[in-house]
Image 1 (tube, rainbow, N blue to C red):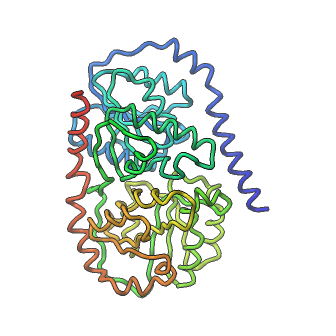
Image 2: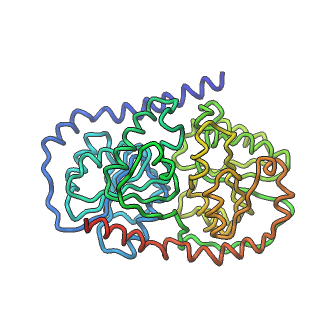
Image 3: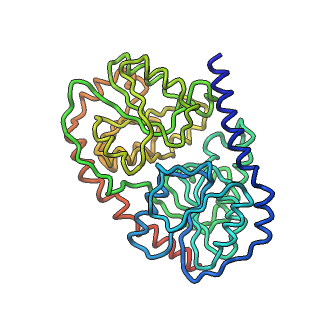
Length: 409
């Protein structure tokens, strides 16, 4: 009965958001056809996406310090989250629907502008690919749809997203790769001619914390990011249905703290709220902004990335090649990270920072021996030493050089 009511509440919330989107479609349709392009003599970098991604504002902040171009954000009203943004943008346009978005893009389309598109989801990036005729288009992905289920996803909306994804990848002038998922995508989409830049999320120097280098008797682990309730589809959401982890750590008397993503609706996490009330070693916190996150995380002992092939039916490629911003949030706070053995690229990046502990499924069910055999002080020292070199401050010029290369085409 509870699952039925939870699904009903989530569907009602989705319907409410859809109604808000459709309410203005007709007037926005008219305004689009009646609008004329505004002249502009300035050069801008325009970030365009459907849902606000935490990495975008982080990137924009460091661009702002190194480059004199205007920075503009275009995002959907429903997908924008203040906790994932910052004050780096000179202008922010929040679109209501497709026609409102088209009007915004039409006004911003100038030959001196770089359009930094991000996704998935792809509503905004796809419209930008179609509408932008003069500006240069760069696509920025942290993950790709194709690596979830290949060309045969179990959901209709994903089939439509795959069509958009292929068009975007084969139309843009450049691609910013935060992960290695494009390697798997080529198997399905064939040759992708756009210029490419490998640009992992990197750590943000502004958020660096000095971590205490000793452990107390009680261990406190922390997870940051999206979580989903048990009633959601396990094939897709199983990787972030963390009930198994909460229960096994509670049995081991290891504290687990979870900070949900700012984009998580309350309807997504109803059973976590109940577990927080009943399990003494589980602690559910309010979501927190990127600017305040490391100051909170520094109070814990380890970050965790508890991802395994067995928890869902997504392609193994998703875990092998994927990345996550939370890894870099943990390193900003000085935290070593316990990482599931199936996420190869995440383990690779953690080793670059010298702060990763690879863990098997069995290890997560008997975690204290794994923790005890690692030198905690050495891990923290390594992170503090290496995170500055692998930081946005030191690497942002790679992205600016890539923009300039694209703009010379």
